[in-house]
Amino acid sequence: MENNNLEYWDNIADDWQHSQERRLWRQHSDAIHTRLFLRWLPEKKVDALLKTDLFDESLTDGVYPLMKSRAKRVVGMDISPAILAAVRRRHQDIELVEADVRDLPFPDNTFDVIISNSTLDHFHTADEILLSLAELKRVLKTDGLLFVSLDNMANPAIAIRNFLPFKLLNKLGLVPYYVGVSFGPARLKRALKDLGLEIQEIDALWHFPRVFAVSIANLLEKYASKSWQKKYLDFLMFFEKLANLPTRFLSGYFVIVKARKVD
Picture 1: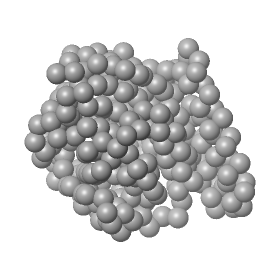
Picture 2 (picture 1 turned 90 degrees about the vertical axis):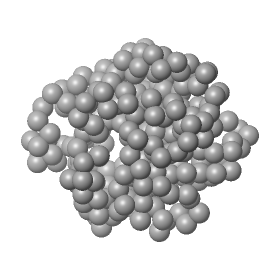
Picture 3 (picture 1 turned 30 degrees about the horizontal axis):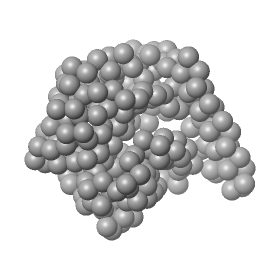
Picture 4 (picture 1 turned 90 degrees about the horizontal axis):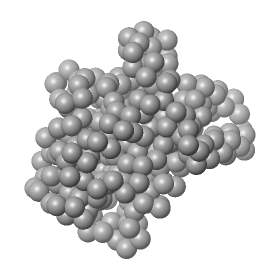
């Protein structure tokens, strides 16, 4: 990634580390992913697991406690040195690597499981997503599992957001950091199948409108008691039941796929 982008993500990381806001809705994100990965991860510990983005783990526990319980070796990578430094302060026993997902510094067939949640939806072009997916497949062992999520372009709110100028949305506070091109469920499935990966499950996450969820969470974080904050998190989790409906890809903010490497 270009140096100015690296500096950009370092600045975002520093800003979020020093802010007392935004932590409550990150807890909701952690809870959603933990609940899903509890079901998707093998119960028996795998030898090696890679997580391709550590933004969550730099601010909260993220899904690290779960990864640690399901893998003998946990490797976390990020392009931002500031994010890696924040993770190192929180989780001393995680193996950290500064790397770009488009050019991974790992040998072929290294990992049993790769978790790549909302890593690939910050690029300028679809080709960069496809290149990253090919790299993830390369470092995944045969029969290994890839969990990959992207901003869901089948959701009308996401499609409209990506059509509007980022600088305007960022200035209005509607988008806190750069978001790039992304795929909907059909295109993501096709891209993975074209690489020879077997789709095992596909789901949609974050069904309460994010712009409202984040704004309310920030207010509660400032002014509400811990008990009211917990009630709000329970309220948000209730909306995840929409994932059981045929309309889940219209309401879900993220599309996420569990795929297996078959060759």
